[in-house]
Image (cartoon, rainbow, N blue to C red; front, side, top):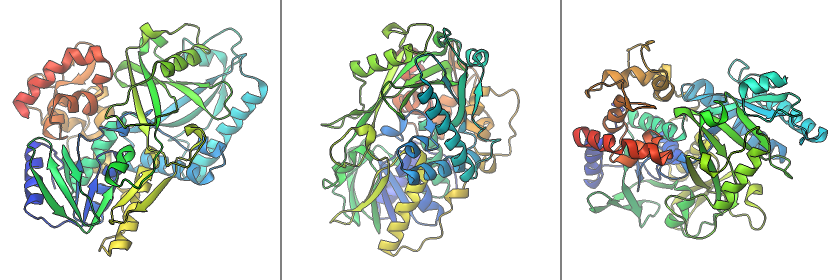
Length: 510
């Protein structure tokens, strides 16, 4: 079936649901967890619809560190189960599901005078434990190289602005890094659509029970009821809006965005221990579009859940002060070209710091029969989907095949390119990084003028990508294009430069 998500397909799918098309499963929530559930269900042969009141990856799923963690932090706190699952899921993503979207990220800890011998030994032991986790998970060293110590000169080559006075080399390890978290969500959702899932953005769910939901088209205002044999709530920090009995304790994680040139165009993620913490670090990570993201914080975020969380001044100061401990230069507010914050959907376990709350997930069934999945982390989205689908199949007596997602390539992986058009050297490198084997199709299907030209000077997103976002990736407005299909919007000044181009493309192709 076609993988294209667009306005016409959305209209057809909405009409089918309003007309009573049978559903085995209705998934509420279009983040990575909901998309993963839709893919697992559709690939098992179930009829499934996913509804999201905003856009794909609108919430927490676009505000992460863009990392696919191997679980080392959880091993340090004695949570061996999460650590091992994380390493396994990282390996699945890097070798089978999405090798085009997840790459090995060098993680560099500079050995500076402020870091004592005991702290150095602890980090080294942690990296060695990470090597053991990687090997136990079956991820080859050709995908994730072994950790090692490197010279001071090599540290400076990888991170030019690192503090040099007393630099005694560095410790280097590797973890998984996403080209972009929102792109992963879109790839999962489109792969689900390839397996006949109905993916419906800007459709709000209310009055949910275990077998019915009221849907409202946010664009037309029209509402109707749908029936399904199972209803799954995968709305993350907003899960309590669907089932008020759920108790979550959101925490806020903030990142700052810099021009990569400001930090000397690093090739590794500068990894700096947080003073007074045994297993927490901040990372200055080289990212797409010539940027570096610096994060992250872990602050209690009680109260009403905003659609778009905002970093606090205290978090910004904390990140700048911590990174400056390891830099030859001094970063300040004037160097920050963007910032973002996301809320982790942690399970409320009572008192204590949010940094210490388990990142495990749980499946909860409400009195009305709605099945909710709460907690968890991006790296384990596939496993979370499998667990909740297994639960729904058993509890609702659904006729489903076995879980296929451990070996199911996402769109853009070479095994699921959907195109015989070969990758060629004349394609922009950035386009291949974001689309993998689909890159050639992005250009081949474009009907706009100058498809491989950038949308603006100095921004390596092509005009063809704006068109493809609308015709194949379900983008319905400028925010969908700028803030999720591409990440231009993370820098407000860049967003302002191209919003008119996005509107022009929507007028022509929307």
